[in-house]
Length: 334
Length: 296
Image (cartoon, rainbow over all chains, first blue to last red; front, side, top):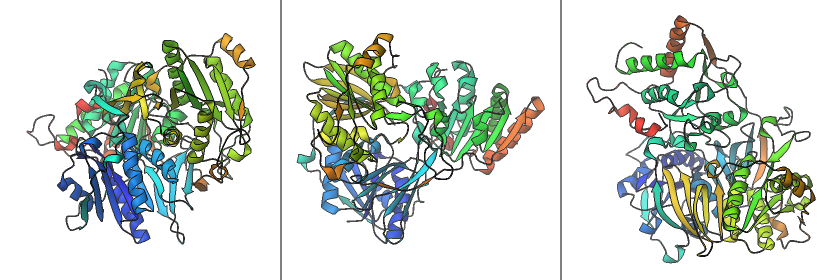
């Protein structure tokens, strides 16, 4: 089997985008190590065509362990399956996404296999000479970047932030194998049961997997004013986020919170309005690709870290921005 | 119920200073606090105790001075504290830390539940909680936002965990391990009475002398991961800042912003001229108004 593995993720039989982002990372490492790259899928109901798409996006081999008992992520069973595969095939590197699944499963597996694990990596490389995986991650609220390696233990495991890299293009010429691996009954742990999902449709957001996030803070003044942000979000294909201040005032629900006690995100664009930018908030957005700030205080921290800042009244700037974007997207002049 | 809450003492986040020469954190003179995300775990444990009776034990591993974090938790109402401190434990990564804490918790004795914060605000890994569950083979639920039901008689627990798609509802047998997020409970403040009690509570010390530990699993030496380099990233970006002081200023600033977004390819393609207003393909990948959520 291959020496570099990435862990694909699915929900209700559909592969998640992060599966392809990981393959882009894994491909670069496998090429440097001159070894093969495999994608592992633990789940249920993912079609053969979707599994083939993992090959087209960089995998040499795809191992699919599918069973109705694996339809939902349950740490104990998934951990048993992954530990069994690791002991059987002894991979050198395993990459998973820093999602609710990856961040739960990987530390559980790491203690059981005596592996090194680094959380939330933003850069991965191979050390010349030794072939060790070099894992770079932000720590202490993004104030430092630490590079970490696991010299004496295998596998070397890492979780990687969703959206922190681009997937490889879909290449229909790429060839690879898709191998279906049956689930061994003895690996199923029935102690924890998933009894359902609750999704509050009006007020739920998947911040970590969004390309564009439009976030508001105390300067929005009241919940009703988030409509201004929503209008801009609609034009840019974005989702709504908020600072802790706004969440604690009840203007949006907790899943929208960005920062140290909320989500850490790496979108292509974060546009903030009425957020001054506490250290705790900045820790949650530091790895974003583009940061835009709208704030009437020229000394606001966010203006120091933004790629583009407007010092002005958000109640004038946001409607104007929405109008321009709207006209622009209708094909008219901006 | 006997509930164990592992906590960590961390530098106060507003206070972190980096040594520009070495790129390491200056710890001297920095105020320390209980990891803010552990306060939610403490509060969840105290509420369970109030509803079902029992005791809450807080455990921390760190230098002797981490005693202060335990006393803060006692002042909030926790019953007992356990300090885990030994030179041999220093420099432990999450693998070695979760091993040591798991051995300590096993020694403390029978428990029904372990409640952990989601992660610590300094190391920021969130790996120790799931690691302890791995060592002790305990049923695990991470990112718990609501503890819906606890039935100590049946030995079962129902929780909702915050995942990418919404809230996943799980039923677990006790004993179990939970990691919780902010939504689970609003932490109470320490009381005067609690502070007085915290001062006089005796805190036992666990070290390599009174624990049964595999010596090669401890501290820096027992850690599979090694830090090879620490760098301070540049804090500021060389961004453009535009002032929009009046109506003309706003128009000009927004012009520049739209041009900036366009240059970076961040404006989705135009919708088909006569397509339905919400059906453009440009909006499909990251969702539409229905996904943006928020209360109007």
